Amino acid sequence: MRRDARLLALALAAIFGLAAPLEAARIKDVVTAPRMRDNQLVGYGLVVGLSGTGDSLRNAAFTEQSLQSMLDRMGVAVKAGALRVRNVAAVIVTADLPPFANRGARLDVTVSSLGDASSLMGGTLVMTPLTAADGQTYAVAQGQLVVSGFAAKGEAESVSQGVPTAARVPNGGTIEREPPGALADGPLALELRNPDFRTATQIADAINAHTRRRFGRDLARERDHRTVLVARAPQISTARFMAEIGDLEVQPDAPARIVVDARTGTIVIGQDVRVSTVAITHGGITVRVTEAPQVSQPAPMSQGETVVTPRTQVEAEQTGGQIAVLQGSNLRTLVRGLNAIGLKPTGIIAILQALKTSGALQAELVVQ
Image (cartoon, rainbow, N blue to C red; front, side, top):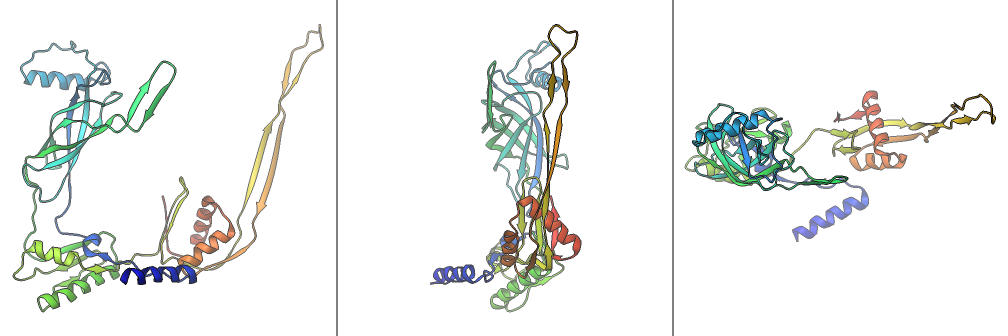
């Protein structure tokens, strides 16, 4: 019954131009829990076993030095400059260390070529320590590379797809040191992913409504538009309490914002965008430049020379659109008005920028 009622509401909104009901979201999807953040790891290593697609040691001196150092640690004495292999590549290894990770857990790592290797297909990453910003080693990576791209070329043609010099090693990292941080004592600070005062108050109200029924008192209060402080619940673990409040639903609010990308012509308009009543006309000027050079040939048996005379024809055409009145009382009306003018994305972006300059656009305009 609930699903049928929702479908009916969406259908009525589409027919009569009504605003669709706001979607509810779980608190766990709106906020981040305290100290629950990933830590970036990075390391420098070697990939071996390539089929002649590795670094050329003459152009990548660091690869030769790393290979020589590795062989020296293994008891193999190699003279400087004696290495001429093409099955080794120097790589940068990166990974994200999840919060509360235990020693011995596995994680995925990303491998990217550092030298002039043409492909990492078929390579194997040699044991590589991964360090964090504090300089400590938290994981070690090793394993067979999985490359999604490929490249092949011949004497007259080449074909490539994806990036063959970047790969992943699924479960290739082993955690050797647990990351610092835990659910410390004291109030829990829930950080909003999209800061907003209204959303913060809704989260605090939803948590208080739950804690009044569960514990008989309010435990949450909003500190600002980004943080909601929640006191620890009595006689219950922090993990269980976070699981309970994480499933509570709220209706997140967001500021009126328009995001445009002039390179791709992408336009994203928020639901609360409003436009004051304005009159708009949009036209363009098309300039055509045609080059038609003429060749002047001398008479037969004469001493003249062939002369090329340039001939350029320039035409300018201006196309103007009808003036239209645009009043966006809601998102649907605004989109309908922009479509009525019959513009391409570049024209809509220009109009939005002009509306913002005139003060008629009651929203934040973000140009990427």
